Length: 184
Image 1 (cartoon, helix red, strand yellow):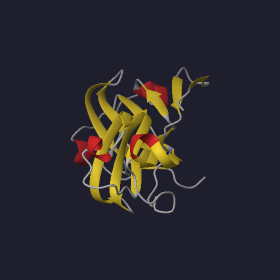
Image 2: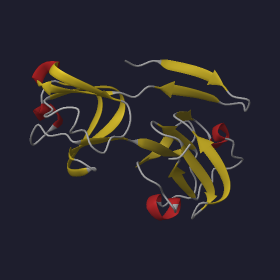
Image 3: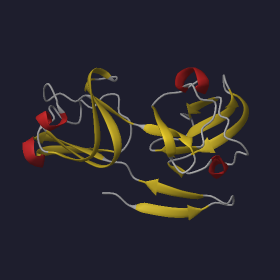
Image 4: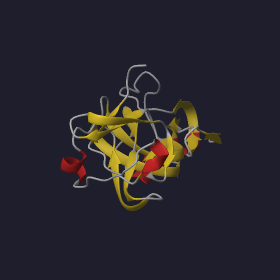
């Protein structure tokens, strides 16, 4: 289930933390064996043999027919899907999943929204924008870099909404690159 927790940082910023969750069910109408997932998973095969219904408590998820983020892709938003045809599935095979993260052209999560899942060595080459004014990190921990190719000032981002660049500690909206932090 979903809950929100507010935490005040030393910087004047407010972060909303959300536990992301997708629940996979082997049978239709949320019956049978189930598996709860709260982060990216490259191989779901050991958790269930088929997927005929899904509940998403929050966020936007990409589900893949095959392991390692391969095969048919299904983009699902928060809600209930009592049978695989409801998410336009071709079959009952879901073998990997990822949660989307978003960056925005303007403050307050406004303007053009751009989605990302992976590292980005050049924000301009991928999105045709130099500036990121706000961001919603749904999953994982990320570093924003001031310049392309992971150079310049660095800013640590954890799950939450960043309604303006000052929320992640920057003095300007220029972001040249970003990458997921994988080692702690």
